[in-house]
Length: 465
Image 1 (tube, rainbow, N blue to C red):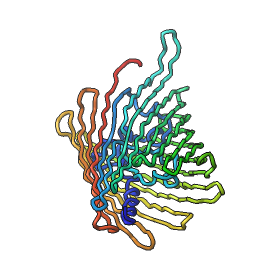
Image 2 (image 1 turned 180 degrees about the horizontal axis):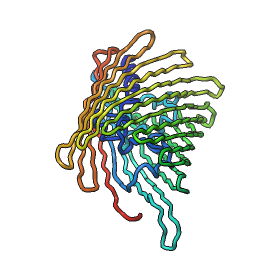
Image 3 (image 1 turned 90 degrees about the horizontal axis):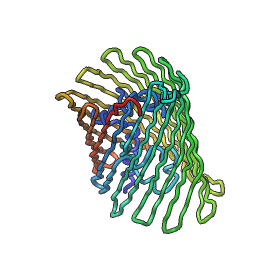
Image 4 (image 1 turned 90 degrees about the vertical axis):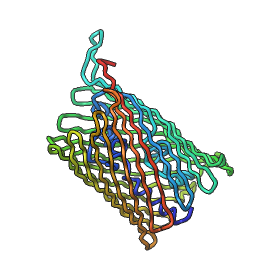
């Protein structure tokens, strides 16, 4: 792959930081990100802040279902083809491994797709009493299991990664205003290149959280611990890394008549000790903190929303002699706003997102900066009873400043989808995105994406579980 194509890939990675949400409904509506709420896109402690104790208030029904996605991406001139089935690089892989500091994974793009997974959620929202009079407080638990993979075909070689994953969450109230949450999660990322180079990553862990909940204000705190295990096999030998990762979080939700204001703070720390043939080869380290906030104002049928996020992360590799071989600084500023209208059979929204990104190589003393402006518009409309259609369009321009030159990348996205009520308690959402990207860096190159999304949810009606 040429240097110019690598720059294009960097630009696409910047665009993907804000291009996809986790909701098939809004993916059919121009990939609207923060203007409306729905499953996986709620302004609460669980979805927005990632605090497990908020799972109890995240929904008011028990349900099961599945969601997934698929992608085919083709680079016209470089003859690169990506096939992806779900999100093969989970967010926790980015959170708990320094992608650029560890071999192989830096070649794999972060496509930000929806994971392929089955979920089951069970809730008891009212206090009850058992057969012997014992108190049963409100509680909720959920289990999610999935499998995703990706294949890259380039220059006659095939690279692939597969990722089975399991997540469990439990939340329970211990008074009228306080809840706690427990999580367990893990996945196994396995990379293979022509059976010559293989790598695996297994970050087992869990977390504890507690939150205060009232009609006008929610406050939650969360702490997670993981034990990442990473190994690499090649014709030259094997390397392994393992260590510790800690991630505390704080979230708050302010609820007024027509306003919801939610804020979250995250910190991530990781240190992995490496070995080769039983010998110390140094440490892979990762430090990052994130702050984000969003305000949604919904007077009557109107929706207005503003969003802001700051992200600062530093992956590094220090060898056994305390020499820093690799150290990067990623720094993002993201600002967005949108307006929309919600009627009985029509939903229309428009959003704009601005991103400023700085990538600093502290060892090579090299800097890459970029700005991105993303515009999105989408609509949902009733067709017949139990069937609605969705359409949307998005445009993104990335201006990349590298080695005293400005490179521009232009991306267009056309989206469509359907929402179907199959049965009285069953909902299915289907979405399709067609995206094409061109760049002044390499005018002969064109990157084309075909992306599909699926979401199926069945509501369980039962007095108790």
